[in-house]
Image (cartoon, rainbow, N blue to C red):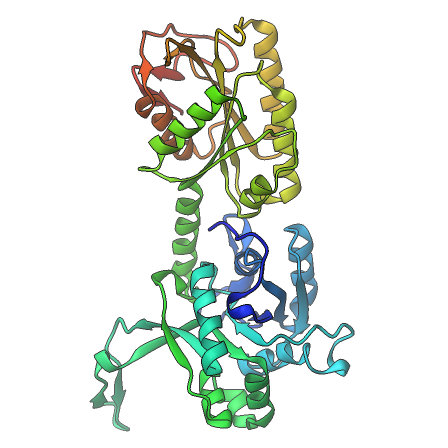
Length: 447
């Protein structure tokens, strides 16, 4: 889910997005509207906003909320560092809220800050947090060509109609019908004209934007087959499903960072190749002391697992720069970031002599980064005779036990798939390694 480098939108059109977020969450139950319910400690609407933010060619994101939630939404934007977002007061129905969002691009009197009118506008529910850039690109391209477009999915259940007496009247052929999903996209002039012409009945009881474009502007929308992750959080159990998906996504991506030296570059190649069968890997070869745009893009794409391969003496200073970048990105506010420091002992370059001073430094560094919700793990590998040999145990702070599944998955890849000459390890006592931690015979252990 990494963002593209900043560039033009598909088809070279200007694009903005409107996210209606004014619902009361009646079907969910509870006092908090579903768009503001916390999933992994973060409001659901923030995930949807972030999904649009990651698409660099979307110029503006308009979030439409009920009057009583305007300040709440502004607080969310500030807390999670959202950019390009404008908050607009919604109406009493979905269509009235969307119409208000569109007015920000067309009516000076509606907003103190008139946004640049886009050629294409995306409409996407604030409670659909898992939209990907690929499907957004497809509906934008289709809207440019046809005037309107929307994502669809096959029906799961057969749709039936009941008669006045409560008995079956007829059923629909499920093969002929589809479920209308989000995102949808429109040429701005078409959808804005449709909303200007529609009746109060449409605004109060309608729900389908594509229908308005057809009814009032004679625009037949292009239907684009969507993916299974476009579902809408509606009921309470959907929140649990969303949380599970988010957790799984966090454990599926890792960024491997190496220096530019030849030996490190070799390791930097072997490690991603060995991990690709288990997780999604982004491999880059940069110096952490430089403000690398590629690394910045990966961080902004919300990667939560990093492996830093280095041959310097623990390279705390460079690692601190990565920690600073992560902290500024605000991503540790959502979930702990796992940072695994892999240090190579390469005889032709240097020789490590690990003592209490080193352990104390690492311990202090891990303690400080934990306060920022960044969990630091360390691994030392000896590189001899063109092969790597494990020379000492895997050190970690015993109390840093969050997200162990992620750590185990990455370390198994390091220990099992890169050629290692194994040798028995002695038990270690101390703050960064006890008898329950260590790599033994190609297996990693993390409590």
